[in-house]
Structure formats: structure tokens, C-alpha cells
Length: 181
Image 1 (cartoon, rainbow, N blue to C red):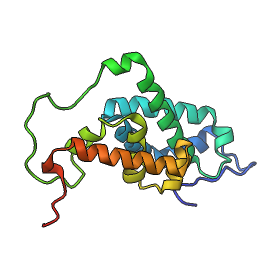
Image 2 (image 1 turned 90 degrees about the horizontal axis):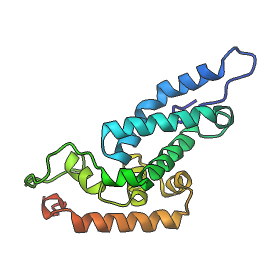
Image 3 (image 1 turned 180 degrees about the vertical axis):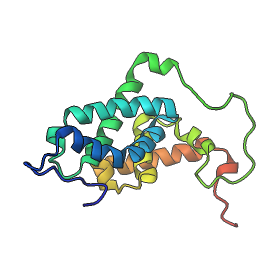
Image 4 (image 1 turned 60 degrees about the vertical axis):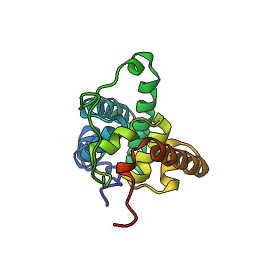
């Protein structure tokens, strides 16, 4: 059994629903937290998002634990919860950041791991951000991303293409890959 797929407990073995959920949670919580952080852009909102998503996964555990991939369901809940959060009016008025505004731009090439690149990813629409996070951060295929988001593969391709074009337009030249390196 892999860490991305957990089998349902065998009846009669004394494994309770809570123990089964806890065993899955211990293995998968760090990866789910990283996904939530990538979606929200900060650890505080990520913790709130993850807590809400895990509560929903737990409530559906009897049905979900028999499914082929619990992780796909959990990621789908994360994305859906994140989408429903940004739709709320009060969340649109607030935006927490790590940095004080009006800071200078970096003059070194960014390999894609620093916070500065994620600041530009956070400017994408929530759907485009979800596609970028699932495709490039979670390294899911187009088909897996489409399944998690509940859209077609073509939608994933077009949203990803638009997101990358938007990032190219918004990011300063100092973040652009240098071909002559």
C-alpha cells in the first residue's frame, strides 16, 4: 500500500473509524498542509483551510475510505473550500502578507522556490492558482488535476496556459529565466 492510497480497514480486525482516519491523517497531513499553503499563500490561512477540509473528509470518512484515492478527495475538498472562502465578500477586503508593501525588487534570478515568485502566483485568479499549484507544486498530471478540480483536461490546459501568460506579463524581468546561463 502506498502513502497516496490507503485501503479501507478490514472488518473484524478491531480498527475503528477514528483510528483509520488518524492513521491516514498522520501520513498525509504534511502534504495536505503544503497544498493548502500553496493555495492560500500563508500558513495561517492554510491551517484554517486544512482544518475545515479535514473536518469535511472526516464526516465523509465511511464513504471516502472505500474510494480508490482518499488523497484526491481531500485535495478536491481543499480546492473547493478555498474557492468558497475567496467568494465571501469579507475575505476580498483583507489580504495578509509577510512583507511590508513597497519593498525593492530582487536583482537575482529566482529558481521558483522563493516567496517572491509565490507573491505573483497569489495574484492569479483562484481557479488559475489552483491549476498552477496542482500541476507544478503537487506535480499532478493534467488528467489528475482535471479530476481534482472537476473540470475537463482542456480546461486545465487553457487555465494553465493563461496563468503562465499572466505570470510572464506581471513578473519583472529579473525573475525571467536566463537562456544564456
